[in-house]
Image (spheres, rainbow, N blue to C red):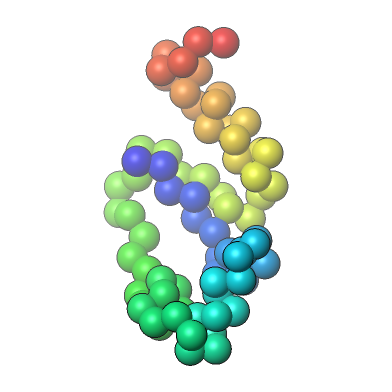
Length: 73
């Protein structure tokens, strides 16, 4: 399991479909992080800081996969 730990404000800023805006306006119900509780995983194998650029996160993930011989260089 990969957990990309991203603050709600960043999720909203990166939302190209405007779903968070719709959820805040009451147009979407049971939207995780707005009116439905988000439960972070307790024991993810990989924990990434979602405040970083997406390209950095991808590189970190690829590095971890290579280090663990899951993929080849």
